[in-house]
Amino acid sequence: MYDQRRVEELLARWENDPHNAEMRKVRNEVFDVLTLRTIYKLIESGVFSRLLRVISTGKEANVFLANDVAGNPLAVKIYRVDTSEFRRILPYIDGDPRFGRIPRDRRRLVHLWTKKEFKNLDAAFRAGAPVPYPVAVRNNVLVMEFIGDDEGPAPRLRDTFPEDEGRFVDALLDGLAKFYFGAGLVHADLSEYNILVRDSLPVIIDLGQSVPWDHPNAPFFFQRDMRQLSKILAEFDKDFAPDELYRMLKERSGDGRKR
Ligand SMILES: Nc1ncnc2c1ncn2[C@@H]1O[C@H](COP(=O)(O)OP(=O)(O)OP(=O)(O)O)[C@@H](O)[C@H]1O
Ligand SMILES: [Mg+2]
Image 1 (cartoon, rainbow, N blue to C red):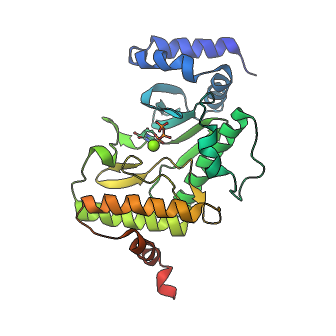
Image 2 (image 1 turned 135 degrees about the vertical axis):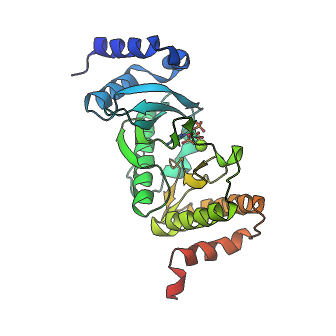
Image 3 (image 1 turned 60 degrees about the vertical axis):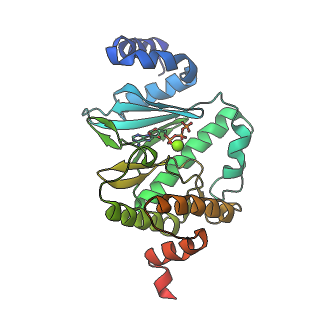
């Protein structure tokens, strides 16, 4: 049973933690009562034991570092229900054959969106693409593998340059081949902001907007992604026109050779 007092107790514990000055700041804006209830349910069912600190605060979601019951790190992405990004996310979910009618209620739509990111992570992970392992989803809260180490979260490709360039680019292309042609997903927001670099290898994140190939906007999103990929590769002195990338990724996925 949901118990407001226990939730308040838990929050008090987090807030008294010296690390959690930031937590206080975001608490009121991100933790509405229903989100608190969801966090509580996840704690109660043993998915994680506590939220430790803020990794990232954004317009649509906040990402936290958490601990599982054994003390291992996890990342918890909590979508905000109050933002007015409703119209922005519709083109990425309306028409997705995996989901039925689009809820009119904002909260429900955000819950569906969160579930969509979970499903995308699951499909990508199963296909062997380098994405965070998805642990659990409930309402607007997504729990996944923490990409980083004791020092903190892995940097974004935007903010770092991998040591072994050749190895990185190769892993990126292989990973994307598995993503687009193994899992059959189009990322739809591919950029140097949504690729983390861990041990000089890429990890693709932020899969909320990703769609399967049979989504009506998939070809458009794919072309946009390939323009971004082409820019990323140019940073590594690799010149590929966006149009060539389709064939290259397909070949890498093993599909191309069958022809
Ligand atoms: N699994 C993870 N492990 C470590 N850090 C993560 C993980 N997922 C996300 N992050 C960090 O949180 C940031 C935001 O995550 P993400 O890109 O998924 O959210 P977003 O939808 O872009 O949110 P925003 O509303 O901020 O744009 C990332 O840039 C990354 O630094
Ligand atoms: Mg992002």
